[in-house]
Image (tube, rainbow, N blue to C red; front, side, top):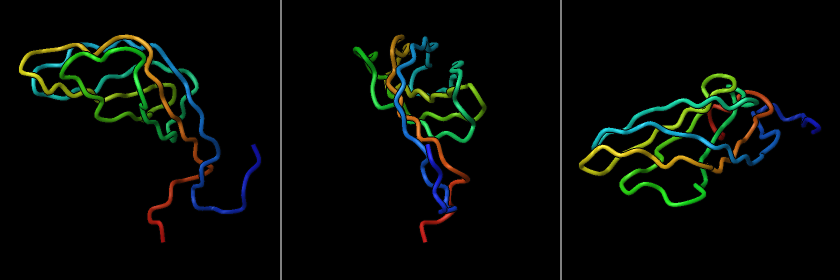
Length: 108
């Protein structure tokens, strides 16, 4: 893709991927951060989980997704139930925004 002359951290590209992941158990009423190998992700990518293909485990929510290191997806799962639960394994749909440069600090 071509580059712009604006140096404000504009989105270079947005794409969607659907990796299959197998999360581990999450204790009752807690959140946990879990890491999954995902070749091609860059540490500067902005990642959002936009859906799961199937039924999620009762009480489990996806709180956050990040790429803090190259080729590694980190997902924070929350468990709102009163007993331990395992997030559903399977295909998670991700939106990845790859920035052209550093993200801006302000919008002004």
